[in-house]
Image (tube, rainbow, N blue to C red; front, side, top):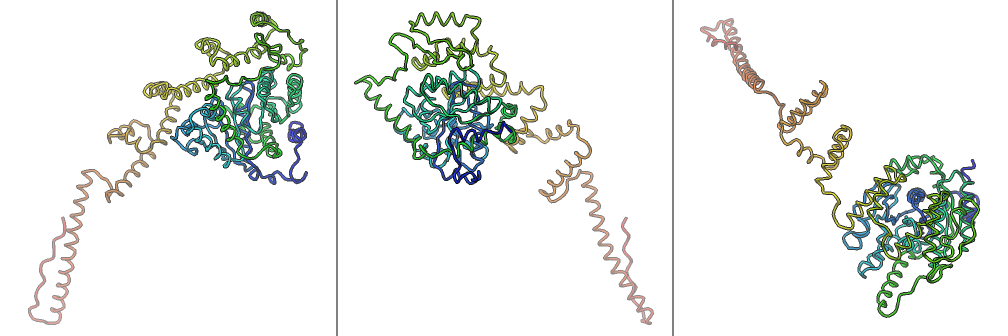
Amino acid sequence: MNRYRALPAMNKILEIHPAGGEGTRRDEVDPLTQSTRVIAITSGKGGVGKTNITTNLGIALASRGARVCIFDADTSLANINILMGLTPRHTLEHLLEGEKTLDDIILDGPKGVKIVPAASGIAEYAQLDETRHWRLVEALRSLEERFDYLLIDTAAGVGETVLRFVQSAQRVVVVISPEPTSLTDAFALIRVLKRRGFDRPIHVLVNMVLNYTNSMEVFKRFEAAAKKYLHVQVHYLGYIPRDEAVGKAVAQQRPVLLETPDSVASRCFVTLADVLSKQPKEGVGGPVFSEYWHKRWQEDRLRAESAGKEPPPAEPSPPGYTSGHTPKHILGPSPEFFSGKPTAPPATEYTPKEAQRILLNWIAEESTTGQEAAAFLHPLIEAFEQRFHDLPCDLRQIVVLLSRSPRLNETEFRDLIFTLESHYEKRFRHPLRSLESRMVKLLADIRNSEELGRQLILQLKEQHGPSLCRAIFSLPAEIVSMIRDEELDKETLAFLIEGLSAIYQERYGALPCSHEARAMLENLQSLVQRLDRQEHALEDSLLRLGRFIEESLAGKSDPEPPSELPESPS
């Protein structure tokens, strides 16, 4: 029973009390009577299950009767579409260009959940012309009126798009896992938010843990680091355990809440929905989401107009930075802090070259793990990208390293390729491969698999129906040849003949037959007609013969003899 203690623990930490007292039933909390809630679900590091949490949480809220819309704001991978088995035909770009309406681009997910694909375009288009800006604002206002929950699935890290989406939300959920790199990256995210003046409560959801006790251990380490180095109070929201059912559901492209609703992870998602639906209304209400993007657009526009008059306001420098020097605490707490190991004292100030030498020596040490080095380098690379809008290494080399990386399994490698193709098509407005080349590859892939070929034919039949059959079987001889080549049993052939005969009779009013059978039928019809005529003649002769006999017996003189009887048919 200990693994299901999440709801009381969550309510205690968040100081949540059910409306109406302890005896209030779950179905008495009506989310439809509450204002729209915009919740950003984010993380400092990828691979912590953020998108999976967003998907199942949305379904759990929708199962309670709430109207839920998910913003797919992850520019790296379209995981929301993959998890729900959806293929978007249009994106936010089509709406902002005036080509499609809001209803045209929204995807229908399970349990009534709606998805806005490629919603990360908000951050890009918020800085463009006035026409597209007002299309965006009107669309966001419409969503605020139509839905009870707007769940924003952001990308991982501290990129500008991620930060803007987090700042636009009324509530923020940071997803972490027990891995030290997850904790250090989440710490870096909260640090950047603090630098930008973000003062709303930050809730932490611990994923991939053994149980509630394990989740509290991870949260306490993270909470201590936030208090000690950032003076920020984070709040425990709940946990999702490591569950095999989650991996199986992802492989089936199905949310675990629908695939195995009785699993431990599914129960925790339901509990998480309960907690969010019972949170107080403070800070909820009004078109906050649309107003944020409208204000950002105005600020960006004013900054662009005054660019030639005075320099734009600079971002405030984080504590520990000195002009011409690296920060005293580059990452704040070290990975050892989150792993429970003793922490080293803060470093002194170094010049960039000195810091580089120390860092290279530290990476070369045998005691330094790959996770520790990655946790240190990741914020540096992101800072470089934000400052110079590029990456500090050769892109071709990155591709080669990714192809060799043991961290990518077959599924992740395939998803990465699909994502690159999607971004290629979006940028250059045409597919990466021509239709002919894709057809050739598809035929090569199914050449040795009869089952794959059968599935392809069934899908084509479902999409195109009779027009496809007419294209395949253009000549009657081809149909006959196909039936002759197939090893059909007697019953199947009889069924085909019966069906074709019924169609023939329905169309032409008679059953189909051969020339010999038709000639024999005509002869039989002629013979029946002759018999009918002779039968009538015979009846007439018999009547006259009867009158002759009666007249003879009556003594009538010279009775008229009857005519000859008709000949019998040959």
